[in-house]
Length: 95
Image (cartoon, rainbow, N blue to C red; front, side):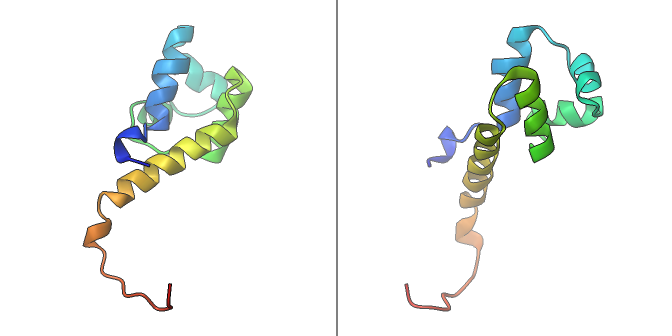
């Protein structure tokens, strides 16, 4: 996947789920039983989505937790691929 296609799942949740429903981060954090800081970090692209948080979004909004986790992994891989040229690892077995 091209890195430009790997959207941060938290930013996607913010713009496509949370904001359109008119829900404030403080209120959502209270409903989810998490800190406002943790939720804010996720929704502003500074934090990672955990499986527990993905399930909370599924329960609250109906978006599948598995889909959200795949978005997180795609974003993580895109970020790692940006720096793969800096890694120095030799092949240990024939391809």
